[in-house]
Length: 157
Image (tube, rainbow, N blue to C red; front, side):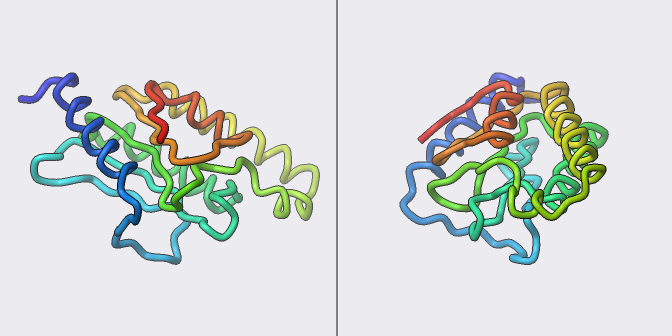
């Protein structure tokens, strides 16, 4: 059985390779703001969460926040993840924070719920029982920076 240190070493190698490539090739459903993968083979035990809102620099919408909350909850209860990597599928940007255009159209109650949920997300990421790595390829602003800071390790390109 591999140790956490061995998983971290493999994970850092994967991150380094992915961040140094000029173009990224991922297979994913473009209708999803988030791409969740359990890696297989030599990378068994490594799970990735890819943020996928390139048109607005991965700004956190209510939909993306809901997907992130559900995914982090799933990871914490499954027990198969040894290392989690949170990264962007949009080269040059990690996360621009909250989607302020969407927020401008929210009621005060919706804004309050959004703020509570984003705080819960950061708390849940911080308290995951496995190492969490934020792979930063570009800017991390507002809630994106908070997400990176909630991770145990931050690797930037």
